[in-house]
Image (cartoon, rainbow, N blue to C red; front, side, top):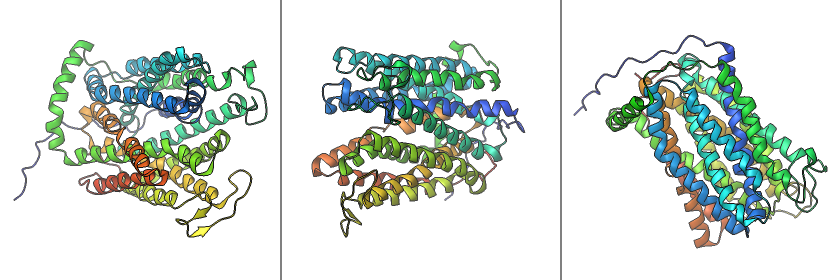
Length: 470
């Protein structure tokens, strides 16, 4: 027995043939404007510094950082759909981007006050980190919703992929600059180039590492300006209070819309699963390498640069594959690579390959042993597909979502990527604790990527490249 056809939706708003080049470039630059927040603060520079030098112990630092991350994630999960619905009703996006961008700048700048060993500053630093994270994530929701107004549907994949590639490149350049001129080795007080930190920063007070916060704020302010200057905004549709009332009504009506759009609902569920796995893979990648191979900050920093290079190339190429073969195919391909990469990581030991079947000799130097080389190689493949996975996910949402509710759907997209953001890291931690094995903990990620692939494979009715859902 056939299910009744879904009721007709409002006509789709067609994208213009082509926005001015400066508008497209201005939109693309938003991704590299934001990326240092995640590269420098949450991953490679500030977070390790906080855990090792500000908190009383690394374990306490990791726990406190996790609580702050979880609190920010909860706010993002609860508010993203509502704010997206408000933007759809109010029309304009730039005022929201400006407000949340200001939170990113404020939160990043306050991290400068994270003096080593000063426990009294910890509440301020954690609050600043949460504020900056909320600002960065919410600003991205509204910037993403501008995308369909810039290019025709057949070029959405290329635009999204180019934005992700530019973001990776921005993260790469910012990380290289921090390692070369500011961030220092605690034992030597010197940067990766063997120099004291630039601008007269005090290495003993770890000012080079703390400078990651103000550096991120300044970077954002410079690179986000073209978006505000050149990207056209939608006209104002209604006053804020009316938009908020409309948003509440739209959110109440969203669940029935998802019921008649099963492909969109299934995609959001799939994104919730595999995005969680990807976040955990990056979060535990450095920890796994440190525990298995004894890597320090220099090795992890260089590994991060290499991974970011392949991420840039992958996101750029993935956008073209998206336009050629469709976003769903790109997502499936990326998930297959991540499943194999996770299994490959599990096969590595400090002195052996292939689950201990091939012993290797110890060696001295950077990435000297064969297991280390294999880990770096696997990491490069992870970077190669991570960008296309995230870019294609953004494109598939645009093609599946109703145009009149696009910002709201991007809010749901952010929600689906955040609402269970604790699940994969917590699962890894629990399994690791129960088995006393890092490898067993990382094995959990294979389950997340496999389930995500199964769900995305069942997304039916996804439009062909160059088309929007109708």
